[in-house]
Amino acid sequence: MIKVAVTGGIGSGKTTVCKIFEKQFGIPVYYADTRAKYLMNHSRPLKKQIKSLLGNEAYYRNGRLNRKHVASIVFSNKELLEKLNKLVHPAIYQDADQWFAEQSQSSIPYAIKESALLYESKGDKYVDKVIVVHCADEERIKRVMKRDGSTKKEVVNRMNKQLAQEIKIKMADYLIDNFERSLVEEQINKIHQKLISLERK
Ligand code: ATP
Picture 1 (cartoon, rainbow, N blue to C red):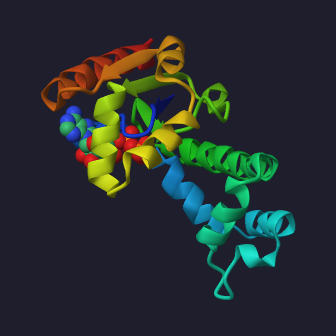
Picture 2 (tube, rainbow, N blue to C red; picture 1 turned 30 degrees about the vertical axis):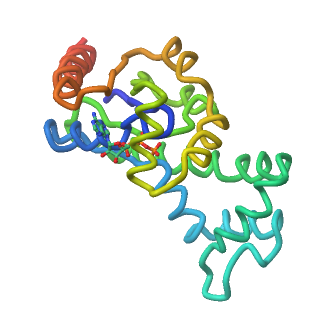
Picture 3 (cartoon, helix red, strand yellow; picture 1 turned 90 degrees about the horizontal axis):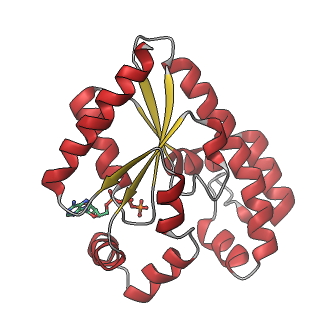
């Protein structure tokens, strides 16, 4: 079974693309951001490490992560953010690895990990193929503003924290240009066929 990652900048359409792989071809998808949130709330060893880095105030009494508090600390402190990432990213690699191993028990040709910060977190080392979803910056900004009700400044700030699209595009194995929804399915279909043929070799 081939391990595939889908990545791309904020609002490029990663989730939209992954949903099509799931629906159209029954390919299982691991959503790294959702899973990271889950692990930060439920993984005992990770919670312990986060508390020793950021203090007990990082969690509410009911055991849930105090996201606002954590964001406020790490937003203004790059070093702490890096340290937090060094705790969370390995936990995700390990969890995704286990998930890929479970998926390989069935007869599917490939499984997908959706990860926004794949290259930034050097997660590309742990997969066989990378699909980069991309779209013009102005369009991404418009889509995220509409989806999240964020301001342009907020979206641009988040964009600026990510690796530039052009760099991701150069590193990708496959590209999906997500400007027109109607053309996306065709591109996904082609990539699906290529992945299936690779698996057969
Ligand atoms: P994030 O990095 O913020 O998680 P993402 O890369 O997963 O974003 P999506 O959530 O899939 O991006 O897409 C962003 C928004 O743009 C969503 O509201 C989605 O419905 C919309 N969208 C995605 N693709 C298209 C398209 N081709 N045409 C119009 N709208 C689109």
